[in-house]
Image 1 (cartoon, rainbow, N blue to C red):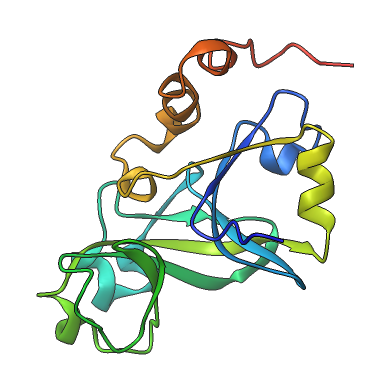
Image 2: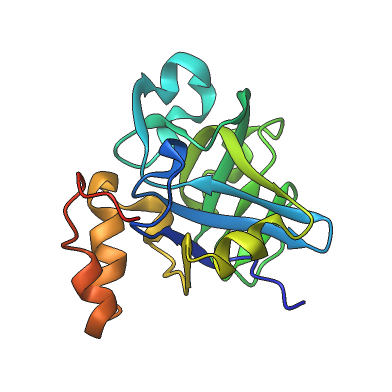
Length: 184
């Protein structure tokens, strides 16, 4: 099995789970035992400053918490984009290129010069061994390459159609699929 860590899962119109309707998930881990990701396009109205005050200056607009998924909604996962992805930084775990997770117990002041922005997710999306692969085979997800800015877009509600349109061809046409049409 080839790891899909760092790739995007883009919900297809065939996906029936309302937790993932029109979502874009960045896989932060994919191993034989399962997969873990965060939903990139479900912003809440809760400011990062209300929950993690010390980190709020590093949060990209919109500087709010995001619903990372239905698993452990009280847990926080923080994505960061490094300014210089070559230099190792304590507390940073690379997912792909300059994007990775960051340990929120680290002093954010120590990271101000090396981080270009963060996004904080409440909860995450998780799959057991073989579960994600089965969902992909059933047509629930498109597996696509991520761009470094996908996790930090200013208008997260536009991410689902934006990612599909940039694929071109028939995939771009899916971006215009009506949200209220059910597939059998």
